[in-house]
Image (tube, rainbow, N blue to C red; front, side, top):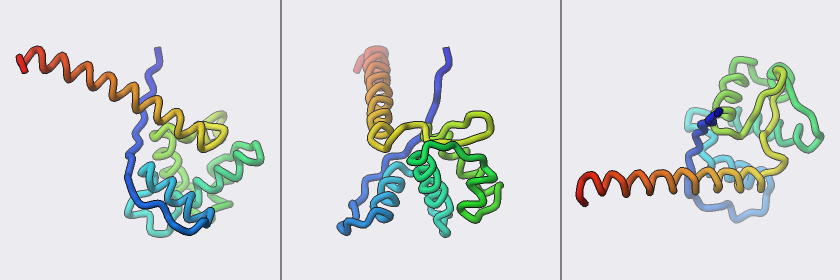
Length: 135
């Protein structure tokens, strides 16, 4: 049985008041902890948007194609792709990359399922530890 580990950090922040698509996508990704403080040129954001556009057109992209579209080095693209793969948001097939889900709603639904499963396991473990400690 293959167990997929993923790491997503949920960050609660205020949603932008403007109804501007780029701001909303940026907030969405920030809320999932996809961008680090060191990403000053928003390279991961640009990569994510490129993958969103590719999803809309039904294509997978190689790291070279992504690098060309976002005007970043292939090394930087690979670095961000590994982070997005580690979060369970991006998948790789035959050296091409795509978002794992058909849309962002499906992504959130899957994250919610994973979170609920993880919380259930933690609760059961906490109950067992409490029993062992006579708490």
